[in-house]
Image (cartoon, rainbow, N blue to C red; front, side, top):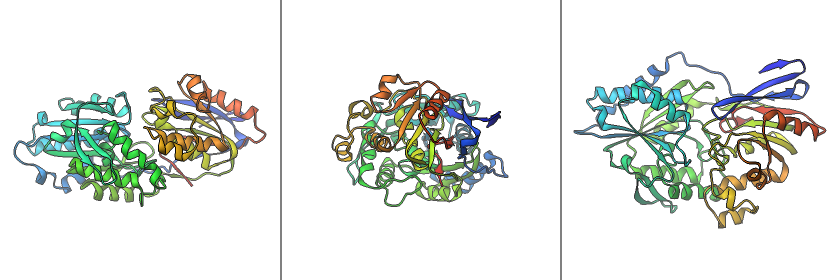
Amino acid sequence: MHIIYDMVDCWLPYGETEVYVSVEMDYLLGIAEQSRVDSEKPPSEIVAEVIAESKLGELLGGETTVAIAVENYSSPKAMTQTLKEIVKTLVELIVPKERITIIIGNGEHTKNSSPVIDAIKDSSDLSSVRILEHNRDSSDIVELGSTNRGTLVQVNTSYHGASLKIAVGETRLDQYMGFSGAHNAVVPGISSLETITGNRKLFFDGKITPGVIELNPIKEDALEAVKMAGLDYAVNFVTNHAGRILAAHAGGAEETWGKAINSLSSHYEAHTEGNADIVIISAGGSPYDQSLYSASLALLNASQVSKKNGTLILLAECGSGLGADAYNQLSLVSEASEFKRRYMYGAEALKEVKNVLKNHRVILVSALPGYLVESLGIEPARTANEAYDRAVRTRRGRRTVVIPKGMTTLLV
C-alpha cells in the first residue's frame, strides 16, 4: 500500500504480476488481508522431519515405481521444497530417480501453464526426475469404476500404474471442498474432464461453503474417488501469507489433511467492515485467475461485504479464456433448476455468478474480449483504475473494501 496525497495505491495480484488501483483514502474502509505468521524452523527442516517420522520406507518393496501427483494451486516454492525432500528420502531408501515420476495435476485447465509447473521444471534438485503434465482433456487415462454418487473415476495412466502412489498439496480455503489438500492433486488434478464434471455437479446436492467440510457431497465424492485411485501416501502442508511453509503432515491422506486443517487454524481469515459501496477483489493471481471459471467464485466473497446494489470489481487475467463451456452455452440461463438440468462443466460457478449479478453491479478487469464478458451481464474494463473511476462516477456512496486474495481468504 502506498499513499499519494489523498489517494491510496493498493497493489493486487493479477496473473503472474501485480496491478494497482488508487482508492480515495477517506473512503477506504480497509484492506482485507490474512494474518502474518511465520515458523521458527526452516521449511525444508519441517518437511524432512515429518517425512522421517512417517516411515515412508515401510511402503517400499522390490523394484518400486513411484508416482507423485502434485496439486497445481499450491505455493510454488513450498511445493518444490516438499518434492525435494520426498525425492531425497526415496533415493536414500534406494529408489533410483529413474523410477520416480512427478505428475503435475492441472486437471481444471486445458493448458499446462502455472507458477507451480514453472517452479518444478526450474528446480535443479528435480531436474533428473521424470515430469509429466496432465490436463483435463488428456487421453492418457484409465477407468476405475464409479463412486456411490455415480461419478465415473478416470485418472492418469502413469499414476495408476505406479506401485507407490503419493499425492502432495497445500491445505487452504477451497471453494468446492471446504479446504483443499493433497487429495486435490488426484481429483481434480490428474482426473479426466468426465470425472471432474461428475464431481462438480454435486454442487447442486448440498450447501457448499468454503471452510466447511461437513455434509459436503463434492468432498465426500472426491475422497471416495481418491481411494479408488489407490493413493498410498500424502503430504499436506500449510503456508503463510507469503507462501512459506508453516507446518506439514505426512502419512494417510485423510489423517494428514485433518491435521493440516488444524495447523491452518484461522490464518485464512481476514477481518473487514461490511456494507461497502464498492468492493475491489483480486482472485489472487495465477493460477487462480487462469480463467474466468477458476476466478469467478471470488465474487461470492466480495458480495458478502457489499451492500445490496453495490459495485464489485474483480481482477482476474483469464489468460486461458472463459475456462468452461457453461460460460458460453448457458450464459442466458438464470434459474438454478435449469443449471442442474442442463449441467455441463462450470455450470455450478456460473449459477453463483448469476446470483451475485441479481443484486450487484460487476466490473471485470481481464484480458478477455469485451463481448464475452458482456454476454454474461458483466462490464469489462481495461485497468483497475478505469473500473474504480467508473464505479465512483456512478455511485453516491464510495465506501470501499479491497481484498487481495479473494479465492483463499474467508472474510469475517
